[in-house]
Amino acid sequence: QQQVKQSPQSLIVQKGGISIINCAYENTAFDYFPWYQQFPGKGPALLIAIRPDVSEKKEGRFTISFNKSAKQFSLHIMDSQPGDSATYFCAASINNFNKFYFGSGTKLNVKP
Amino acid sequence: GAGVSQSPSNKVTEKGKDVELRCDPISGHTALYWYRQSLGQGLEFLIYFQGNSAPDKSGLPSDRFSAERTGGSVSTLTIQRTQQEDSAVYLCASSLGSGRYNEQFFGPGTRLTVL
Image 1: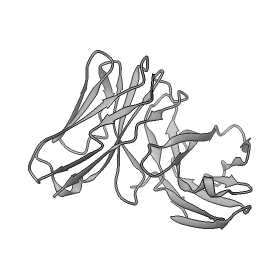
Image 2 (image 1 turned 135 degrees about the horizontal axis):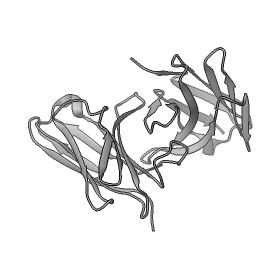
Image 3 (image 1 turned 180 degrees about the vertical axis):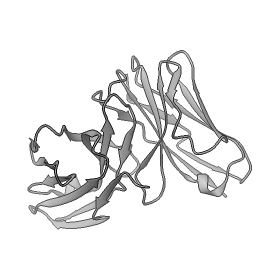
Image 4 (image 1 turned 30 degrees about the horizontal axis):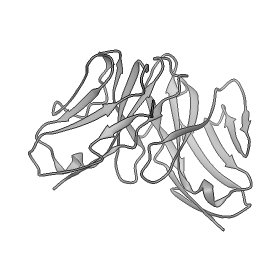
């Protein structure tokens, strides 16, 4: 049973457009939500993370929106660039645990 | 020095054989994690080490899987009597401490193919 559900599986966006990836969870004990970026042949790398006491976190062109009541969170990539083409994973973890539950990933392709 | 390294980068084996996958964490990182990434799937947690101890082995899929860490550094994931469903990319990550807010740095993975 997947603890974190991610959509879409793949996404094609034109350069300069907005990329939006969504994740949903059921376990209300989750309290830390990171996003990872993975390029082919590389391990995932932490991109941005949010805690549930805020509804939004922005770092450069990347923004996480968090809706606690809906148990959903999303990654927005503004002004998407071809260099953003990668697979993105959302994740969630529970207080004091070191186990992360990952979504199934979204393969983003930004067309020049 | 460099980031997390894993070896081999690719491993092809026959069903029923044993395999060993190695992870060298970033120097000074006390926590080490193993994940499995199957095609089209997210990362599946396997096991976590704090120092040489494994407080959480809950993700190991079966008793054919085992892992150890020695000297608080290198870790080895062993899969005995490999099955075709074991084919996946095995990722290792390390972090400075054991708290969940400590960023995990991932290695490039070992791609295991079981024929």
